[in-house]
Image 1 (cartoon, rainbow, N blue to C red):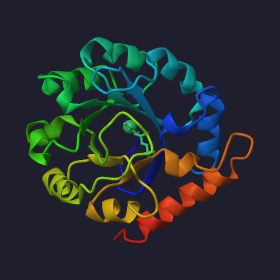
Image 2: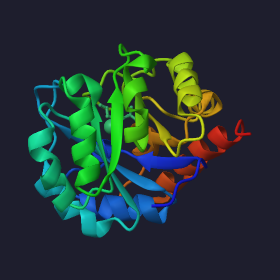
Image 3: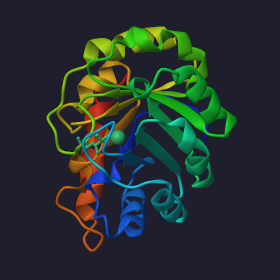
Image 4: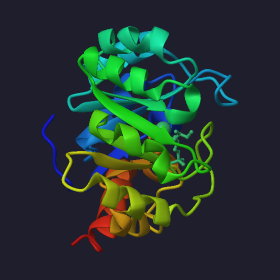
Length: 229
Ligand code: DX5
Ligand code: ZN
């Protein structure tokens, strides 16, 4: 994984056909996805359950590029090695998931993955100040995590504050929740480079008819890059 701040579109397979993950990942990659975003939920940290490391391992061979795993689970630490073994490139834990984000980020990097930290809408940018040199990605949630298809919550001020805090460090800012061609320019302008989108990518298409995936991805990218300087 090389670092750059170009816009990367990361379809969330939370909005894909759950009976067809392998083909869905291949389809969105063929239609221009940069990363694949994989949402792991435990029914405790968030009020929904998806799947765990075994499913991630099954999906992995169908992804050519970056597998970006977003853990919405607590605790995190007992499962880090399992996600490394499953082939995650980026493993993101929520700062709200426990009292020891410093230890968690150390363990994620120690297991050979890029380390991400996610912030719920109610968590301020300053919460990650002390771990800035331990992360490769900061995920700013623009919905309360748990479900796809929710309304975008404007976190522009937080994104701008994080962008300043990051400075020259090779740290991605990822936005997750309600990203579509209308909201993408706002977050890109504020300093985000990885745009997660579930419903806005998978809407209207299927593995049998993947053309809408390509159009959806192009529309989000064009909207975001329109304001990129
Ligand atoms: C929300 C998940 C998101 C979600 C985004 O808890 O972390 O990745 O799939 O879905 P959309 O793009 O539909 O808001
Ligand atoms: Zn996510």
